[in-house]
Image (cartoon, rainbow, N blue to C red; front, side, top):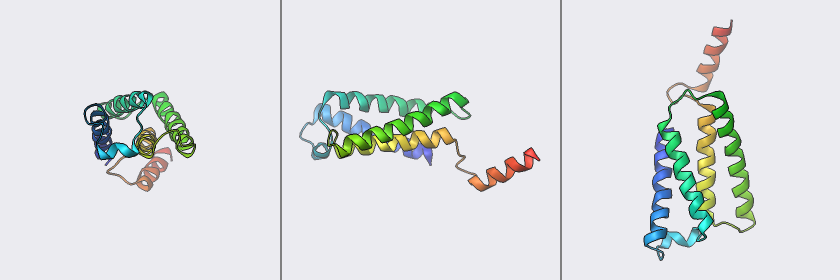
Amino acid sequence: MKKTLTIATMLLIAAVFVSRLYYPDFPLLLIAGTSLWLEYVRGALLVLLCVLLFTHPPRSLYMRYALGFFAVCLASTFMVLMVDYMVNVLDAIFCIEVAIICGLEALELNDEEPAHCVAKRRTQVAA
């Protein structure tokens, strides 16, 4: 499920990125920002999602800490920027979605196994 969410987000960000370059009158761009720094942010988000897609768990503990910290900073920053009308809605949604993906990757939950089974197995191993 995480890979599906990551790939779908990458496709949406890439579609906005490409349509911004080649089709500036595209109706979807009415709710996306037009400034140059947002293009850099979209490009950085695409690179981050590619890195998360191609690096497989288990990741190091420091990378997980960095992903969690980045997720909290990204989500809070873009929520504040959206409330202050400095970014448009679509860019804020993209950044919050990438923050959610980074948070999920920082937690490294297994898609096949529910969380309560993992906790039960960890307590059995510790005992």
